[in-house]
Image 1 (cartoon, rainbow, N blue to C red):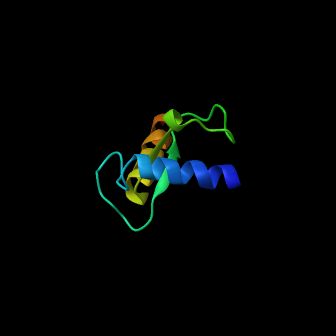
Image 2 (image 1 turned 90 degrees about the vertical axis):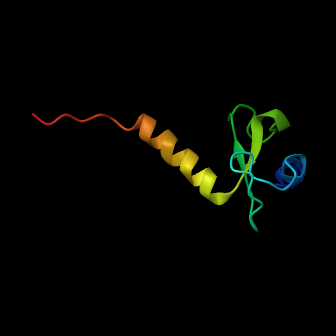
Length: 73
């Protein structure tokens, strides 16, 4: 949406065109939702800039936390 493009640019600029976790300045930035409340009307405090690697690692870690622990009988 027009709003998302505007807020995304604002967040990337606020974070000085660097990943908030590793500090890299990649060719492509991803803006991550720290919280999904207010989705569509995101607040800057709920968003951070991540490089694709850190963003992927974050979601992989979140997925691992939620993965059920299976026990074999």
